[in-house]
Figure 1 (cartoon, rainbow, N blue to C red):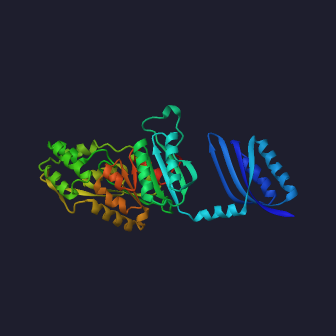
Figure 2 (figure 1 turned 90 degrees about the vertical axis):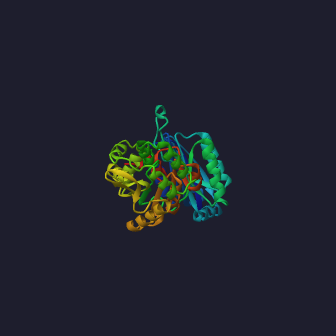
Figure 3 (figure 1 turned 60 degrees about the vertical axis):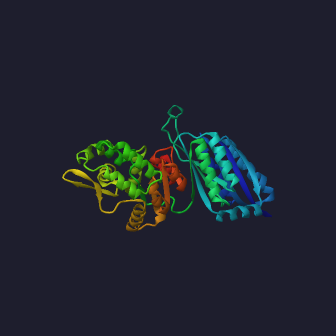
Length: 406
């Protein structure tokens, strides 16, 4: 008489071709159904798990397991078996309806203490880790340096009782260990974003262009103080912008080209934009800065859209005013929504990236809003933040591995 059995088979040892084939060929002879299958390889060492449903004669069960042992031994693989009860299996099946989240650890290098502390927090908040994946590439020992990237992604199941407390714990850990941690719901949109909108100053480029203009006009310190206060959220953007612009009155138009030519792109900017374009994403600059410099970056990087402030220039001199509507925080959010509609996509398919308080409105309406190397107020207010790595780390939050990049 045949008896139905659910059996978990674990195989481990040095990785080589033919292991999965050898085991499943024997299971095929028995007419087994595969209920789950998973494999991981770390440093050429294999861990393979197969959950199967068998209808097997009681007398033939041990013979079947022995065939698998012999086949595994022939390729120097150890194997073990664990019976699974139907109740246990059904409980496992019931778990698939629970919400899933992605926890992403970003650092220059990953340490044991980072993993220990992060996983302690997830467990304390009732989240169970289903899988762990390294998204960053393999790094030679002699290449571990200040600008190397390290990223580990955890797929977790469950619903935290207090999401705000979980985020607070992650933020405290990020500050204490100098790492970045992102926590996002795992949805169909995660790898189906279509538009990425960037702030320009101190995000896509390292400088605040208005500060560079002020230096050329001899009012650098005054403008920088106002800029810093505005980025920290201490001043209304429109008021601070008007005060800064007024200080630029009389600046010669000829200095603009020199400033544009010397703009330094932020770490990872070119790599990110290149990858996004190759993958078919649209990109946009939504900036409280100036169109002159946005268009320069558009030509240099191949950005699709640019919306920024238009400097008013009369007789070759900056008047201290702008033409048209000032692009403040609310305007950025409106432009983002307009571009999403134009592209025929949902807001959930939009990524917004910025560093200042005036970026918070667009970060909040985008499906994925990222505070990049942001001021403390902005970092605390945004759902996601990257402070340590370059802009190309955004690809990790989208679920791409280094090996996926073009």
